[in-house]
Length: 247
Image (cartoon, rainbow, N blue to C red; front, top):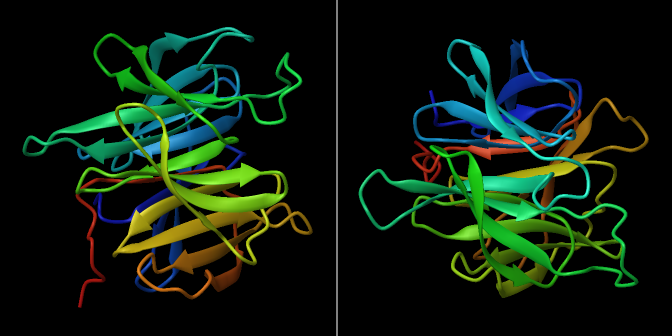
């Protein structure tokens, strides 16, 4: 059940996406949540964690659709009101951490891209523990089963995929995504050893373009679906998802 990529739209609809055959399945509309989703991550137990534009976090069982609010909610102007988010595996067996990277909107600074803070979200206390700051603009996150953390970064009209240091938030590597223009919303996940990027089509805001990138190849991202039939604001994939395409 947790071996697919899960998507959430700006309109509170939850989907599963099957990269092997590019099929999209609607799971349903979120039965809780106060506003518009901002980002999403999925844990190994099949629970989607979704942060809203209003600074609250909800949990959704992707098998049953059961939805519940969490105690987490922060006010406007407070750090970690909105963030990109993803689970990445820890060193121990079947262990993972939910990482969040602060997103800045209308900052009170003259910096074009002020530093963003990476944090660890404590799922027991519902608190964010800051880990360190790194340069760069807003990013959605994805983690891997081997413990790496990546960001799909929108910066000054360009887009990049970056690897982040989980201890400090610093950028370890950065690769420009030639031909990928980020619009009003974007998300991504890693599945089958590849990165999958979802970018809302601003000419048709109810659909998204889907790109695939082989991180070991020099080729630019490949447009595999010009019109996925939903806008995507968040994507989540479990750290137990396949690292190679199943045969």
